[in-house]
Length: 198
Ligand code: AKG
Image (tube, rainbow, N blue to C red; front, side, top):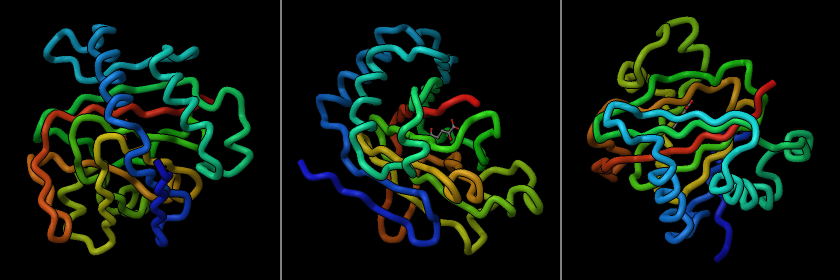
């Protein structure tokens, strides 16, 4: 299948690769995550790995490594490309506050979406720092500088440069996202965030 890359003119360094993972690849990832037992307790919604990432994640890293210009060369050529992963599980209505990823992580971050679509909202980072504090994205929805990015199962989002440092990203705590004339009823969503520690 042909690789589809969506760019966002106002957010340099933000690339969305729609449907990068086939349904089978997505199913294998979800099965592996369940089999690892990370989420056996109903209250657990986050699992972190450091160092050598598990084989089921490395299979996706292999796919990502083959995408040319996903990151600038100096990021793309580092070894390893990623040494930390966070798996997040969101029930319908769950979100994540708008944030810029911590400085302890290198530039060049990837988010893999599984099982459900959602809208991730990008807002200029200075709004978070200077005006909102660490606020939830619903506050930012009133601002006209919000850029919604619909993430669907199998999509891979890449952030580097301005997308990583100058824009904050978050997911509103809502069961339904409205983006233009699209209405997304959220199901359980799993994401895998890949980063490299400094
Ligand atoms: C983070 O873990 O820092 C995220 O931004 C995760 C975003 C997502 O789950 O899609």
